[in-house]
Length: 323
Image (cartoon, rainbow, N blue to C red; front, side, top):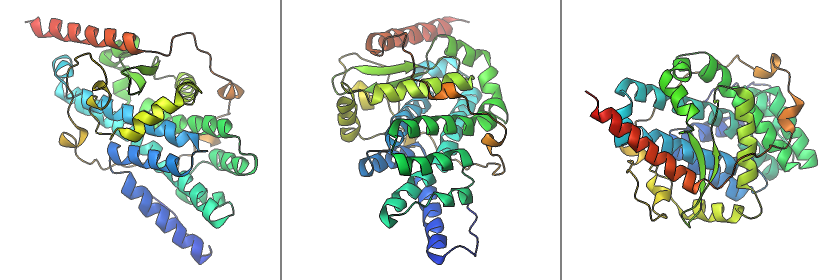
């Protein structure tokens, strides 16, 4: 459940607003499907908040990754206990990001309705003072790219300690299976269009905070590129998110291993968090986090992804043949 401190000394309308935001966040943070729809619906209302669309498309990928775990190939390659731990890792990371980011988005939404900034209320949701300051700056200057970069920096710090470096999920990122997957770039963020093409970037060295921030900036650059943005938007506007890779594979003439719908295989998960952690109290913000990302690789991953899927099938076939 969303945590929120509501001081009695606040004006009554602000107290009520905090309760409304708390309830809306809880309602939309049930699972991967509700989170994805909430992000994309918010972008439809506020197209200047680019991060919300980026979050929605990355959330689609998280759902696809979750459902991959129930596919035939992963059933052969991974144990049931490891698949469960990997699912919970995806789920915890995305839940943490949403519970921090969605109140920020709603505070912006209500700021536009009330015609005055409401970001001083961020602290009552345990939102970092770093991102609170960035929202106040955006309200004045309207620097869309800077806000996206700042939210990428914030979200990656949100998951860095409780998911990547400490806690029950740390073993995932140090396991041979994850390192093998990381090395061969099987974990990939894809942005499909309705012509059977897939753009994006592969996730390399996921344990590195700097690399994850760089990846986020690359994905944003791809998603909002002048040539491709309308294609991605047409896909997401016309394609209901189910968690199954059939969402986008149906636009291709290649036959892939099928993955199930997310809600047919996964229950709603209850999460917990230490609200006292504020990452920016102990971290110095690096100027390079605001540098333009550098691309040394192609962003059209259609053929590359098809090759990776064949490799995955080969590895699964080899393992299945072993005694």
